[in-house]
Image 1 (cartoon, rainbow, N blue to C red):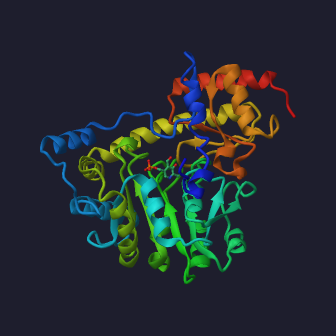
Image 2 (cartoon, protein in one colour; image 1 turned 90 degrees about the horizontal axis):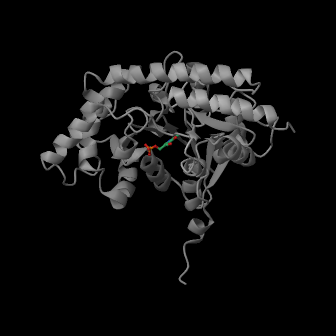
Length: 388
Ligand SMILES: Cc1ncc(COP(=O)(O)O)c(C=O)c1O
């Protein structure tokens, strides 16, 4: 047999999907693993995609994306954060947040470079870093309510640090960053020859106060990659719609990776994205979804607390991460036992780096009925599950 690339062979399949796949085999299974909105994509986005297809808009676009879309992105971001980005030179439309992350890593990392990431963290980052022969340096946030401090980040810096990646609101913890924390991180990182990558894919899902972003700080503009997308916010994960805002010199490099990798994002998806960012009903739709998520979050938080599981109240995204270490030190085993006993699927915390061990992730993108039933079954399960 011909041999595969060593770094690819060493990669593991992500732990996040396993339990969702297994629960679908049970007739009465409850799936609390959803990593995407359970709402249907809004009509006006679907219609814009259909119109694009019917009008035959199926050719390549500019590598960076349709200029109308790039303008919609910079206008939308300017309204939210008072930022100034040039749609001609400082925006790249990517195949979801995923390709944005991969293309940035490939544009900046050499073998041996280090990327600092607060953890527990989304499982999609480390494998991409490993593929490049670079190294992930996780910063443990479990003792600081999942919020990284400037001191922790400073202690992780080495001469090999090439980038720091922040993901707030966070998958899997649902944590957001206050303006004060961002300010202290900006103070630490400005003027250092280190890239800041901010993955703000959940930034529309904020349940307390306003979303704050690194993009609000001109001091770090020249070293910042701002990633966002419409997968989570607008319930269109399948459209593969993400984007990067960064200074021209950085977009130029990342665009080279992107154009060789995928030329451009699917043209009908780009038309759907223009509708998502500009349609008058869009804001209302986001509010409607968030109202439902808040109700589900509050219910889940109260139930988990009543069950005696230590848990932080999420302020963003649609995940909650209770601590189950009193029952089992191995979250995969705990999730397996829960699935077998009660047919409830959750994601083991260990799927989100070793710092997630001792936790499970539940999604409140699932329906209220599923959440209620899932909580009833989890409660029943815990009553007979021996504590360690
Ligand atoms: C933190 C985070 N970033 C990026 C992504 C990828 O999103 P997309 O579907 O836009 O590629 C996900 C998906 O779960 C995520 O949780």
